[in-house]
Image (cartoon, rainbow over all chains, first blue to last red):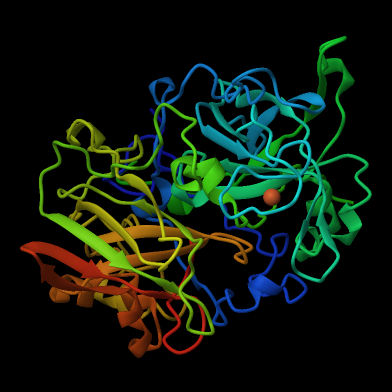
Length: 252
Length: 231
Ligand SMILES: [Fe+2]
């Protein structure tokens, strides 16, 4: 058994330190064009830690946590028919920065319906609730990090920031990874959406390549002919180091 | 041109938004969709250790409580073991102890509250091998170029905070006011150069109706801003 990459005598074989997060590609806390961030952004610098067991561990999930329709938003809230909207499959892989698939990790997603309305008691947008659409789902990646789900394409919606701000169509994603430091929440956008360059939330990201990485291309090869279109969205979590001297441990 | 390194880049974070509950706590959003909502029971029925309640608010820079915040908790059990393969003692964790939970603030008051067990002390980072310096020497140098202190860490909860207006999840830790001795030696608390900011990570122990209740308020900005971590 290799001991490389372990971070201490109390750690098991899965305990590798993670690469430091590249904060220059993430949105900073304070982005005044996204007004809500103004009062919700810490002003002091973050305190940088080296990983300990508290950081490299994290919750694990299994198939017993999920229901059979959790990855099918077309059926998981259907009462007297299927939801209105463009039927799509979203699929891709969860990878780490070294390119390895992240297996058996929980991926959760939530979204507005085709008219841009969320099923949430705080959403009062005038577009109607769809009686057959809940708008949330979840799945586990397979052994290669692959995941997929079926839904309807969400609509754009207005939000109070400037008076005429509209969110581009998007699906919210929550991903775990193996260690709690890989935890990530993000949003997936759709290729060709003309609202993308106008959105203050998208533009909170200071790096155009990082924005492009959030835009899912149409993937006709994954479409189901005469049934359902498809978009491909890969998600990259932080990688972990495996062969550095400093991490080689006790007595080998 | 040198060879390319070919690392991928981490996917950028985006705010969880105002409707985060739909995805992560749909029951709170006003509808039951999943048979099983995740993260509602941190410790499970068999966990040993002291049963505690933790409550508080997350407060913005204008002094207002966030009414739409979601907090994830990750913790060790009472013996200081994480239920994860990276902890070589993971097999000793009580059946049903998940160590992870999701907590949302009350939509009207902003108060959050959850029940769990008080975790034990967790091993710190390892000493260099072969040892080059004593723990005391490394601790003294922690603010300079030294490695992080490798002594055990005081009992703590790891917290991750997301909400509308928070562009990337905020990591912090909650320590316990009744662990003064352990807190004084904790490698992370000691890394905070401004000593008077350390108490922002320490929850106050109290009692109500015979139950142990820790109060922990998180200040995103302004006076007594909580120390947040880049982990
Ligand atoms: Fe949204």
